[in-house]
Length: 194
Image (tube, rainbow, N blue to C red):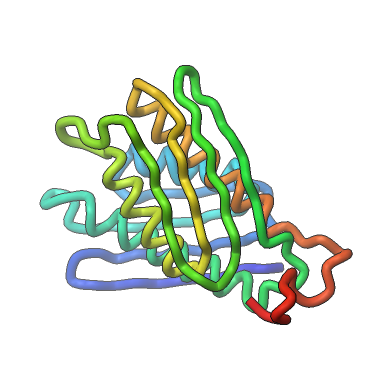
């Protein structure tokens, strides 16, 4: 089983996270940010990875610290659980509609952390969870997991629907890319390593 546990403690946050890449999409998530919990649950379910997260932080100041630190922790856990990355499909691409919104995400489990986040819609509205926080989460995840992640919000109007389509889409591409393909010996690279 490809599993990992990460604990991260700073003056701003405390994160305990467990991931099982060979799971069934089971999750137990408590960040103290209900909307973020919902989005992480969607990511877990659509990637078919088991995810257990207990996080707390200075959300009375701003959600940014905790959201970013959960992204860092999840990225490190994915990297650790993937270990040598042998036999994985490596790539994934998926479109997900959510009512009027549509998102495309693509991933390369390359060993190189990089994020492209294209959003032509309004990123921030009032207070609460928004696209800027989602982007910070995925940036932290991509860099710490060592993956190249492209997220393209094709269109949408309702911010909840847009963010939900993003988390579902990323779940699907991760789930696809981490799958073991028995035809692949070693890693899917002419270099011989990722």
